[in-house]
Length: 575
Image 1 (spheres, rainbow, N blue to C red):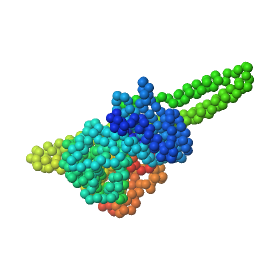
Image 2: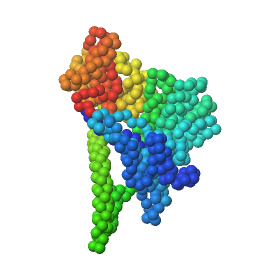
Image 3: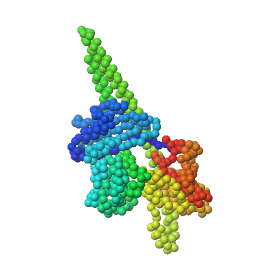
Image 4: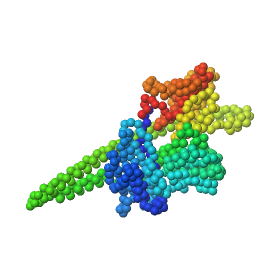
């Protein structure tokens, strides 16, 4: 299994209005250049000129500056790009600022990573984003973008609810509620999380218990943020619809304070990943800069023409003619060296562009394949739902024909909901009588950090329910393994899609990576578990549930043992 290497590892788009620029008493492009220049000065420990064109810096780094002009000659956009080479990869940090005369503008910061044949190094969010948020007064709809959380007291709760429900908001909102008693660990982690999310979300802090209570009263119990909890609200909050609450992930106080649980890092990482997927505003999508290479070629041609004109020999002064020829040779030699350097840089830029294009093509193919797999999943789900609905209708009709109305009503009221997260799944997995889960809790709960977590958790729940149903029927005398059980299920059985079940790994995978398939058995000892359920077919994680069918065994007393719930393990097709 191979995954596309994403060369664009970080992106933040900051919305800018003319009013915001006026508020800082400066031109947007000058502010952007000033922030970028200060960032370069801190990096290289000296001022770096930002003139148009290419500029070579220390250690082979290259700074490129672009400018775009309107028809009246005024500058309305700038792009500053720093390319850095390291032994592991080439890094490219780009700041693009655009402010058209009659429409909102934007500032975008991109960080690209081009690995040099090895694994992709871990990327850190550029400090440049925080600096821009500090310098510019930015808004996302009704919400303000800040580096640190804005304190909210009880008398400002209505404003916060308006921000959450604002239809013009496009970025997430992180709301943290202070615990009832001061806790330095909680405060330290919140203080680290907020700046990491700056520019990718707006940040608010429920400052005291009165604010927490007022927020719960205003937004309702399902969308509340309890003391010590941190919740990430996506755009389009609907407090009146209970199922909507599951979209907005909440990390409770206990996990936020657990010294061994690093899930709190995922709050900032989640909004950063979301920023990568956001559509670009029109002013950035349509922005074009003059071709620097063509401009430099034109300048070289003009310089050559001037040099040759200046070297026209005078028959009456041979010495002057010889001097002019020497000057021409010197100029042309310098131009050749410049042209050679520019050709080399254009070759580097072309190679990076081809690598980025390959990455985008692979991501597109991955997305198409994933969409096809999702369509198949939906069809299988609809088929299973249709069968379950038909069976439910027949049973309901049978009960009602016997005047057993109360039983029908009680059954409808007691139906459990699908878990909306792996944290909720973990808390409820004890309802499966014939399963023993020995998987690592932290590995499973770390999946909640990802945008697809709700879908994965729902599929994992369906898989656990199917395994439990299989064990129950085996203990009642049903023969055959789990895959056969799902292919030809008895009436009332819970099943899992057969095409997403693998009972064995390939010999090559087991020979090279068999140790990764050793998980705690019922007695805690490492046990080989090849059989697994697929929670996703494509993507960077492709979560799996590895299990051991020991229903007929003597040690497990008729149990299915779930030893692993987490990202796809290494196999012979893993990139």
